[in-house]
Image (cartoon, rainbow, N blue to C red; front, side):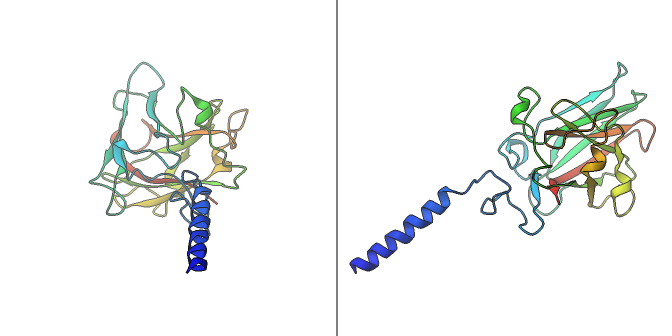
Length: 228
C-alpha cells in the first residue's frame, strides 16, 4: 500500500508540474485553450465570444477606434452583436458605417493586442512565427457592401493601398452569409516607400469608401486570426 501511495503521489506531482508549465495565454502553446489547430497553426486573435466584457486571446482588450481624413465628418461605429453571429454561441462584431457626409472614406482601426497609448504591449510578431495570412469571417447586413483592408505596424507604417475584400471572397462580394476573408500579409505589407514591419504588427484597418458600394450600411466580422 505504501508503494501504491508513493506512485500516486508522484503521478499527481508530475501532473501539476506539467500544468504549471502551460502558458494559458499563449496561442502557440498546444496545451493552451487559445491554441486552435495544431496542424494548421491558427493563432486566434479574437472570436468576440465573451462580448463587451471579454478580452482577446492574449488577455488584452481589442482596442477599436475610428478616424476620418478631413473635416467633413463621416461615421463608423463598433458594437457587439449576439443576433448576427457566426455559430450558435457568443457574439460577432458589428461595424456600422456612413460616408454620406464624407467625400472620401471612413476607417475603423482594430488593434491586435494592446493599445496606442502603450504600443510596446500591443505589437505582434507574425513573421518570426511563420504566419503569413490575416483571416476573418465577414457578412453584410443587406449584401453588396464594399470595404478595403490594410495593416499598420508600431511605427504607423500602413499598407499603401488597401485590398478590396471582394477579391479574396469566394462569392467575390460581401453577401448576407458568412464568408472567410484571407489576406496574404506580404501583399498587405506593401507600403508607399517603406513596407509594413511584419514583426511589429499593431492593427488592421477596415475602410469604407464614398466611391465604392453603398454609402452607408453594416457588416459583421468574426474569428480574427493569423494563419499559415
